[in-house]
Image (cartoon, rainbow, N blue to C red; front, top):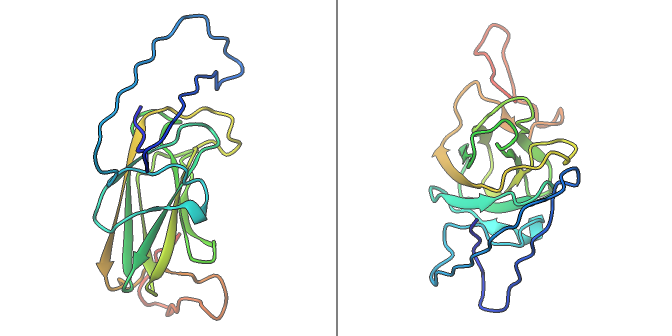
Length: 193
């Protein structure tokens, strides 16, 4: 288990039983290590709210962790142009419940695209962004009710932006009649989510 420490100071390691239906019976061993250096490329805790988001740079992979069933990891991404936003999530453990859920939110907190991995093992998400701006990426526990413990393994996340919006792709946000994507009868089919 690895965590990036944003500043020097005193930190505590808490050991607890996160699965109330299991009674631990064995002893454990704990070893702590520390490597001084940059925290670039790692999630910075606490990033459980949009206001605490860890910066995510286009093209730069970052490593994070869903450490508990209720853990949320927020990242903030700024784009300077419209284009196709592509997110790639690399789960740390290949297990049904260990692929985290992923969502993209606009500056107002509206969910533009998401997958919850409750019934799939999706690892990528693409959406057309018509406006440059600030977007938040939310990584969370797969279980809708938050009861199923997710693995402690790290995950990888990377965002890329391809200039231009491909024809026939739904743009976000298009939740109102005023922002609807045009589609012609008998024309190009529309792919959306």
